[in-house]
Length: 217
Image (tube, rainbow, N blue to C red; front, side):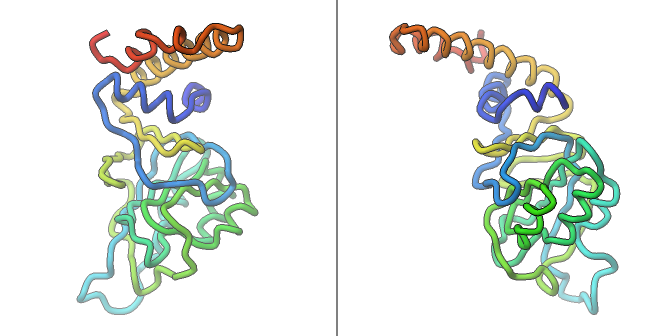
């Protein structure tokens, strides 16, 4: 994870462009413990309770994934963008923090965000809500491929989230995408140095900059 943590979402997004991949999850923002997170995805799929469902679910949503997670893991909750009820809450945040989980990404709403901040667990989600999932959403599966905001996420995929947004890198392409992102970072660092030294930005951000994400290079 050291290489991933050294990058930002903008560089990784550019690298995904270079490799012809989509991986930017639109609409999510940091809502608790405002710091970057980087790790491997542990997935959770939520959905409405089945019509024939009677009584309470066997276990509370997200608990199995948290119990199976630890350092370098990011819990990714596919909540279908729902903001009418929370797909993540305070007790889950406390349990995840105790296990050393890197953070949480929710394609939907989350609640009890002050608790997540208190235990230092980053939570990226669409919105905050006080509305419980009880009676409104249940866990359909965990540890299986899911989709968040149209982006597929499989267990073990790399997830990076910061002030710029959230990106997902397929595990099978991680080495190539990270290497490209590192080259982009190095190129842009040299450009920043040139600007700081007084070189006109029109010269610095010329053809070379425009070709940073050109997959034909």
